[in-house]
Length: 221
Length: 300
Image (tube, rainbow over all chains, first blue to last red; front, side, top):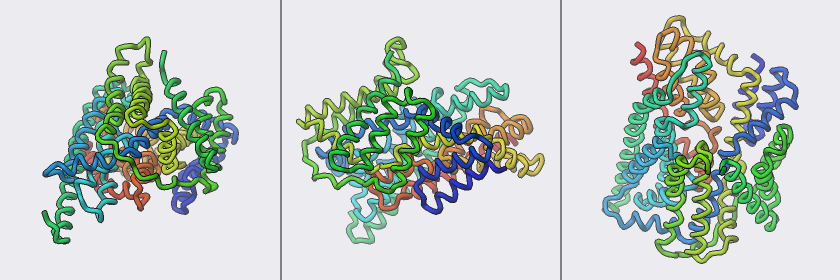
């Protein structure tokens, strides 16, 4: 029971607004001590796992390119591309992006898009331009990031060689249940469709709210 | 063979340049933070487990000092026409083509790391192309990139920190304890109760741990395997897959999943740090309900 103190540390630390990195380290230490582990063992376990998972942080190598392009008008160009399209709305544009993200993730191409690679430099400026509503820009940008996450999460599990599928296979093997990755990945399809319908519906709803705001401002087009 | 080591070398160099450029501008905390990440990428395998632990403590000390600053506002951008799209599209295109091509060359590139290797190569190609097309100097690219990493700040290493916390939890046996508690809380023989506890438990534990990978072994041990697979005779593939997806609904709702929820908010300059989470909750909750319902209908 005492080892659950680490979970309490996470919840409490977050509510009290301590730096989350500090909260995580303290939680690890408290949990380890409660389980009777030597502090140096906790430190070594933590350090080894940190070193083994560096690949998640490697994505930031794209930042110099993105930064360079932004300083040469990438965002403005992306906005211009959409502003010239008739009938482009933020919601429809993001539904297209949602579908693209789900389909590519389902093919295992999870890293071709993301907050740094596509959302900030391309998709968010396009969605803002399509919305053409400065007052709603925070909301439109937040929805763009949300759409990227939903598309990724509920597409990737259809791909058979993704980490989560391999984890599930490994855990079940521990109980003597042997499965092929394919058997797991087909069960991701119904939820992928539901995610597209639910989030897509919300994006259409976003369009309706944006249109109403326009009428309210008396600049209906 | 080209593998993850190549990607880490590239990342190490990029972070080392970020560090140097921060130190030149006397942004000491940011510079030290980036230098330690560079050290981790370049020499992590030679530091030993305790050495890596000390490196983490140093990173956390800098982050918790509150001295890391966001970037200064960038200078106004210079319009260079539609050619700016070319390098931007090279990155995803190279990742796509490289992933497919490298899988056919298992002697040249480690097939398990094909996408990351392709992404790293595509990034270098895009940078070279961008510098030529836009007639820019590398220093300009790295200064702009450093501005972006400064906006992300300490959240950049949050996923690694959570994975490491998960390793400590596993060693301490937190999973078994949580599982035992959850298992006892379900009324005996109730399939609906077990389905709800399993799916909601996956989502909640994912929210605490920041990713579904840590939650899955716990919930599988506590409820999935004993009550749903063995008890109710459910298809193991379905129980596992839908449980994991219920966990993903939790990922959409937690600040602990910093790379998905806090980093984009910083990159998009949202005033509300939790703006992305707020935008995701109305999708996550109905989707969680969908997973529960599907699981229940397929078992009952």
